[in-house]
Image (cartoon, rainbow, N blue to C red):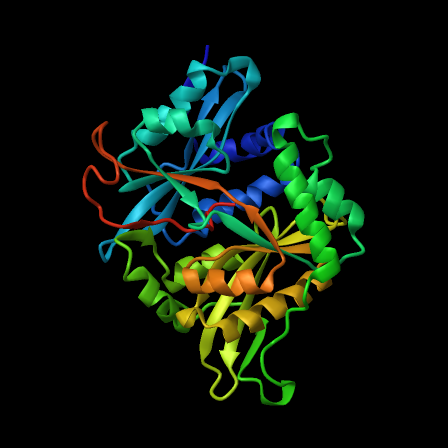
Length: 372
């Protein structure tokens, strides 16, 4: 007999033992601190908000979907969005039981928005059935790649380009273009340098360990153009960037003006690798640069390359959040590749409620997806 219910504190240990079956690169020890990040240390969490649902037999857990509250802004008013995470059901009981968990998520009454993440379009039909609106990020649907360590040939060509497999016939053309692009970067990639002379640098970049109100103010011009967007208050930023429980190491690089130490911009990266000893990829997950200043972008990018070397990363991958940033990256990076990251959002309420149907205005979804 299978049943679905909201999770309780007593389920955490059993969940930490169950979830590595669906996410084999994780361990039991990984999940317990992550649960604490999702709810106990989450500035948006309040008692009574459902933390997720489990599918259980008489003796064990057979499925789970997490429910993480995140602060969002809707036309200047604070709202709570519910973000799904770690939806996994034992293969022996999938089908209708998977949808029972998903139904609990979409019919909750504690959030103004529901968000779902998938980095391919395999869930597009399901999301459309349940009246989610699809958004594809980044806006220009391209990523820019810089080779940090050309000595990591095996990693770059076998693991990054071929993903340790022979590409199917349908991918041969795109794989060939990527191969030529990477080979060209080996031969012609230009060094990324901070602009100006070292003695009179206008900007200086460094590692960041905490966000203050200057980070919040830096976002204001961008948020004002959006009716629905992630709240960039100080508590939310620090929770996003500096929570210790996460799969990948997260690095925040800040850039200040040398004349008065005011903040001019910053970038947030994940060092992506499965095992600590593996070669990694330094991948951009969030960015905010005042006026998309190319000198600030140059300072941040140069420091990111240095950080990548220190973290045994072979590649730096970035994307542009606006046209000016895109212009800088196009002039700086030799490798450009297509990128499609799918985000889905739905207003809570009636079955036919969706962004656009209830006229929420301009929806700006971030590349960073809060629960790791």
